[in-house]
Amino acid sequence: MILNMRKLLDDLKWQIEAGIDVTIGDNPNNKLYQEEGNNQNHTNENSSKSSEIFENNSLNDELKTIKTLEELKKNLKENNFCNLQKSSKNLIFSDGDSSSNIMVISNIPDSIEDNLGKPLVEKNGELFNNILSAAGLLRSSVYITPVIPWKIPGERNLTLDEKNTLLPILKKHIEIINPKILILLGSDPLKYLLDDDDGMMKKRGKWLNYILGEQSLPCLTLLDPGFLIRRPEYKRETWKDVLNLKDKIEELL
Image 1 (cartoon, rainbow, N blue to C red):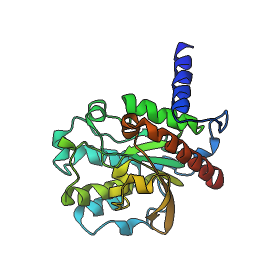
Image 2: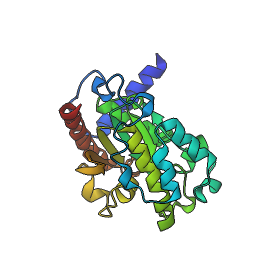
Image 3: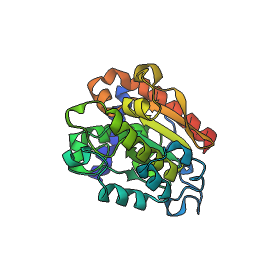
Image 4: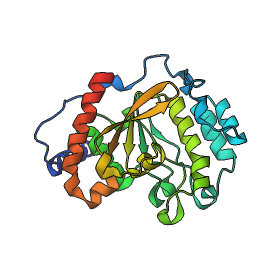
């Protein structure tokens, strides 16, 4: 009971800081999950359509053969892809429900995420959970993965070689999940997945497109929780973006 009350107070604090004066609904949205039998064993039935996103080299040839999340995670653990693996404590693979229709791609993992082996944790995770709650969603009802599965020392940008190695892994991850909506949480997914350097302030709250084979997936860009903690005045803008997300869910799911 105490934990539930604390959760309600956290949600209320987020809504007050964001200037929220209307509610979306009392219950989580049940449209987030894939239909029964769809994505069984986390397999994307359209995987053959999106294979052209990979270049013809040994790594990408191997990725083409991967059909499930279990295979992808095992591959990441057992092979040496880049030096980032050596400087990281953990593989940050995912969190949430892999059968969800909503996939969240978060920023490059930080040291706290690396220590815990999980995306969006502690203060950033609490704020992210509150954002979802304000939209009538639960963390357990979406699927979360970082743009790359390891942290970068010194918080630098990815090198060209790292991009060429790691982005096909992310694209394979998206291919397996086969979501109906992508949420790009922060500037890193926008910059690396969509190759967009315009910056979050120009693109936040806007619907963009990610091409997966013959599909065009709608992507909503949201400000990173870490940024919102540093700049809480932007919580009101994020609330508007959450309403935008709610409308898209009603439209597509």
